[in-house]
Image (cartoon, rainbow, N blue to C red; front, side, top):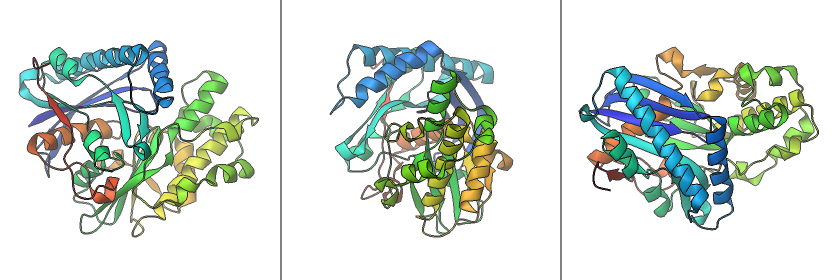
Length: 364
């Protein structure tokens, strides 16, 4: 069936939309991709919602969060319509849309995770059945609620030699290890682009370190790096996940812009190396998706730290910008079919677990 997938990550850079054909199992055929950046105003609205959510002991939407939810839902609807128009596909031809929403707080240690986005509103605006709330059942069952992409990574990598690792570099980095017997182990390794982007934005007003130029011009400060790596979270066995805001760039305060960027970039690289050591066996290859693969300085540092050359997934014919959006399209089809989307080795649930809530147009 045809499916649309949507993703807005914790980097707050924008929205990705992908159209694929899939059976939710072995067959995947990417068809189209579209993306749109958030404006500065939209980022501020979402940022206020994030700040409010992080103050809460339990999710409790206020006016700021509801305003952010309406804004981003409507922005997603615009992109879905654009994607389908550009692909020449009518809404009636699409079986389902996987709507991840925007994570504003991730607190599995407290038994909750919060992704804002009104699936019913999106279904009415696009005329397409929507699946949302992908993480909720998993967290309610005691899982981490993340990462969810491993089942899609396994489908994409079905023909590749194992063991294999797929690294996604978004606001947070997460790793999927795929064994020879199709076994999955997955977990967050630590911050990826999130801290680097935060540092660069505060220091320069720019949204990110383009091509890793600032980091390439700086020096890594070993004392700051050691302080950041001395965190008990890195000693935890997988599965495990973090909130984008569980780590801070505060240890780098006082460094030059370039040295701070270099040190934070190296921090991401070293945390990936720590993550690889937690895998059941060393992977033969390290494939890299997500926005961070566009940063050559980050990839160089990952290679140095891991002693394994990172390979952008585009070399395999995948679209590394679209992978997460495609994954939520794939999982939405699995939801319609009653197939699991999270597993003991990926989120820590006791058994493979379906997830997501189906919202049909006109049903409110």
